[in-house]
Length: 487
Image 1 (cartoon, rainbow, N blue to C red):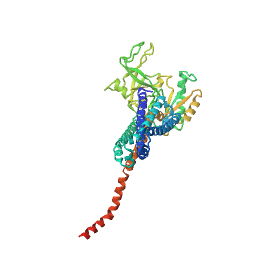
Image 2: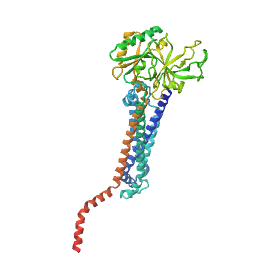
Image 3: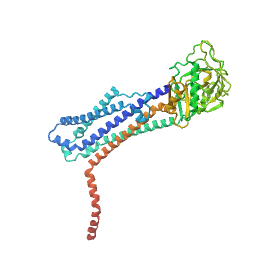
Image 4: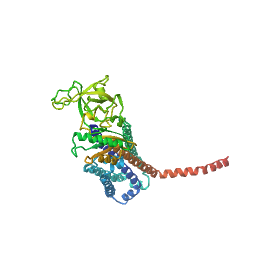
């Protein structure tokens, strides 16, 4: 996993924590709002109890007990649902379509649970005290006569503010989900540098039967021959790395004549050194990957250990090593192996840039060398299927068994590998979207509560207006008749 992928995974819990925090605040505000609506409906009941001699302390205890019961039931239900979600091993694939092997550890954290319980207890206390506060400064007689409606109505501004805050937080969550989703779509639309549709990467474990270098070369040549004869495979090639590979490592490379002498210990930044990704590939690799050669040529069958050492570089490497120059014919060298200086490599071609390690990074500098000139280091294959779905694993296993049953072989469809790298973004967009929808529903419920309370307080006014409107048409003709008689 690259540094950028680790950074993205580190930001994901923070983003989800903020979203959950906003959702929890919205839920608490909604509960408080609905409790105020409920308390408004119980004003006459509370005022009657006070008029009959009940103390405000006893009312406070009764309402606090009701709130505690409701909060406890909600907390238990929430913990049970959370536990069920945590125990589900397919939570990521169910919600976001992400494979389970991405490695996200979803557990029920004790600290988060304690915080949630504390917030629930505080909310229960607040919503229990609110009904008593509504009639605390109002005379029970005035409430019973329904003369204090204006006083209670004036205090409904706080409820409107709560609803406004809920709607604002819900819009923030929905906007965040839209931003994450748009980022996810942009990443999907990024140019990988090659066509990943229909590609399958296979890896043969040469070390299991302990094949030597010659046996390994014979194995991969035979495997490629059998794969080329399969009717479901269009093209096949061998490589040490099939991009995108987050486990790929970089190596130092130098311009010809600038390599350090044998025995030199390379530091973090040796003079003249360039850190590049290195890939040993077979002829036809660029055709299988549909990786265009922009200058020069690719590798030929004659580029073996008996010929001149050659290399194909990416556009990024060519621009770093020889800015504003033609890279064809230039020389590149690897650092000496022990006391032996390695022969330089001549640049024979330039390819397009590739998202080699991670689709989130800029295309890095890459050097491609013939696998025949580096024997024993190539044990991966890339095949392109006749369709865009990739080659099934059963086909890969059948070819491997026919080649040498002692060698285990594993395969991955390249588009699935891309999906794994996009797993965190899928999780974030899916969960934040769900949180945004829930928050919007809660805000709608809170708005309903405020509107319902306003209608309840204005019942007499609305009845009077309705009576006046309904009587007005019948009264107008009579008035005109009276005026006519007077005349």
